Length: 127
Ligand code: HEM
Image 1: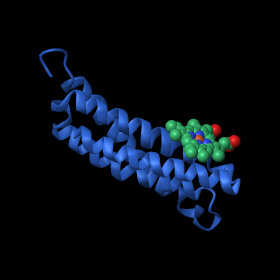
Image 2: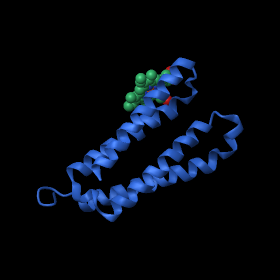
Image 3: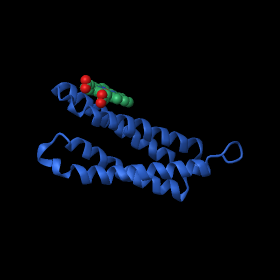
């Protein structure tokens, strides 16, 4: 499971940097928080989860880890779209439901991650 997380994380890195370049080129800096979330939650957090599941592969194969993976990787793009439409006046009516759906999925995923790490990441014996 670790490799899958790491592969997705570099997609976020590319999108985040592309979006940063777009903001810089067009001087549309209002999306700084969206850009920061693509990079920090999308790239850095996703990559960190991938590294943890690569170091502790058994933890990455549990049912909890699989549920967590799908909640996070469906929820995060939805959350980021929500953060993008904050500054698109014609779509702003969708902001609340989109951010609630995406954000809740990511939050739930992180809760499952916490439980999974505490249950299944062990020292020497647990591998
Ligand atoms: C070519 C690469 C990048 C470009 C062109 C770029 C561009 C930008 C721009 C234009 C801003 C807005 C600055 C402002 O509002 O004054 C910004 C903010 C930010 N960027 Fe980037 N960025 C890049 C890569 C990254 C990466 C890799 C990360 C994190 C891993 C990152 C994290 C942030 C953060 C945390 C902020 C501040 C957001 C805020 O103040 O709300 N950026 N970036």
